[in-house]
Image (cartoon, rainbow, N blue to C red; front, side, top):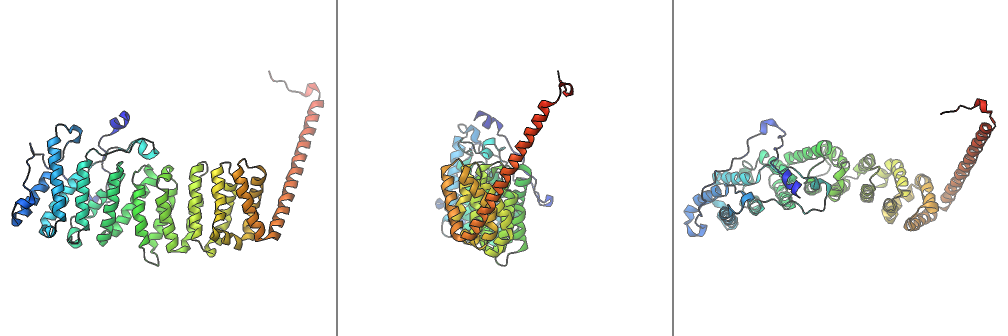
Length: 458
């Protein structure tokens, strides 16, 4: 834990995607010494509340030092109380109407000063899933209220999107998305809600948000493979995909191919697998023609040595097959069932078990039944090997059930495959006997050779 604390410093902000869009970080106001409490809104005339609101914004733009909370205790509590007053003011009936364009700009500036900051460098536990407690942002008592303020401002029916987009612009959204790399799960949860609200309210920002998500995923997949907020971004994306209109745009299909499917590759895949699988299924549900593309993508990134990851792949594959029609299934069934055959004979019983669970799905069984002439010959050897030699009794029982399904499905085909298997075993046995006989002959010749023909090595 001490190493974790020592490693924390200020992280350099990432470069913006477009240099022309860059602008300096908002500068915090100089902290008053000491901060002075301001009157309550209900204690001043309505005509004076706008100016009081501005004064409170300036007070809240002062950043407190949470690393020395004892010395700053008075200022920290005063700012917290002032932020809570702003929340009540935003919530009160008619108050948002008092926010002129200038006051809204000042409000977003205060939010930016508090939220849009440099994050500390990520610790190893953030990516490796250690059992340590998650990191907690020291300034969270203030940050939480600022997030709540911004959320209520965006969600308010009194907030005019055409006006607010001048302040909540592309740079603001981009800097907000950078905060998804925060190790504090409470902050990522607020960010998830906020970005979803922004996407819903500001239609003009939607293409930019999708592109920014693309860039985060690309950087994660092909460069860093370290990011704390991939799961939250995918959760937002799941809702976005659900709203895609049909026929689906080429842009969205490219996003599936270039970002979502490659997200199966990184080592931290398990941390966001549930959200990723949901997004993939949403695409297939929207357009079943994408099923073949998804299945071949899964096969491309199929894990070779990571059995736990292989179990997750098989579970996701089952969901994809549930939404796959026969026409798409036939296009990829050969490579698919070659891989499933390898999984059936895995020494890791959970992999073999998950593969055998595919036959619990009525839809998958129907797909297999329609193409049994191709699939059963591919799988028969694996099923026989499990029956004769797998170490786990549970796999024996599940394999017996699958064999029974195939036998009831087409007894003639099953018997034909069985005969071919027995012939193959017989040929293999004959070859093995011939090989052993050949080696014995070589050994006999070597034993009868004269000593003068031998080469001695000292």
